[in-house]
Image 1 (cartoon, rainbow, N blue to C red):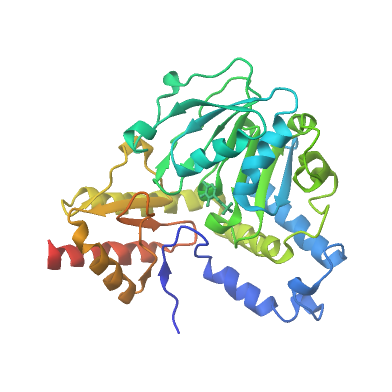
Image 2: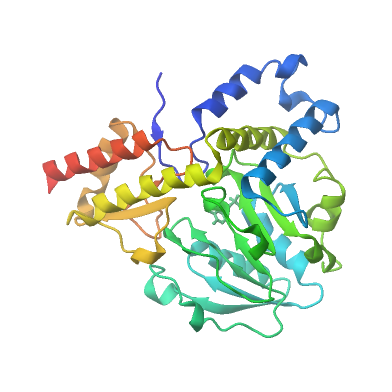
Length: 360
Ligand SMILES: *Cc1c(COP(=O)(O)O)cnc(C)c1O
């Protein structure tokens, strides 16, 4: 049985080498006579797995010492409420920049814990562009500014980190985590569900600056409390051990690829050839402004959407899986995360050309 090229937005494809390592470790992790799923999270074996994962993540992102790295459950959606509960204890106001579906969900949740204001939104333009930085209406009294660097559904991404001065910037980086180098020091909090670009579902990485762990609301539940989790090395309760371990294997795989500079070069090459193929054809179309295009999630429409079903079923037959676009955007979406081989993108482009030749 051969593996498909899996373009799913998440849970998404994982590096083959990571799966093979997990397979070979499955019955007996490093001579311990048991799998990682069966070990105590407080034992020396799992502690070493957890610490190595954090060390490798710190090395990949060059995370400064004044940031904690936490491993949570509850997904990125859990952080939609954890962020306001942890950061709105002193100032119950947050500014949100909305550039797609996930940003809309984040602000809705934040509004339960304080006043969540829309500082800028590109919804009027159908989330195909970014609101220019000089149009943002930032509050004087905001505890933080929240944004989504890569909107997974619309395929819209910020080309650089926006400047919010002294106000901490909070990023839901789920679908672009570890896609390219990042200056962590420009952020107050970065969070990312693993199942897009870093591992399996079940674990969410949170990178938080130390001074922001002292302003939680009094009612924050123990398991969502950044300071308490940092104190407990993310083990206030049983962590998602197996997902954490697979993330660790993925971090190690990224280091083996040469780190984030190397993977970023591959990611940019994959994305630009796919956008090129779309832009050069009248048969396919991507509605996103050129400077706002994601290198991770590439939505595209067929000029005749009556052909969508045929496109998808023939793609599936050709081994190109999960290209259906999100229902709110329609058409297709190719998620081309770190673990999507360049050969997968080449196969998609060949298929698209062939499909156009037969149906255009
Ligand atoms: C997938 C996704 C989420 C939701 O993640 P869960 O782990 O399902 O909670 C949130 N934000 C972004 C940007 C995503 O891509």
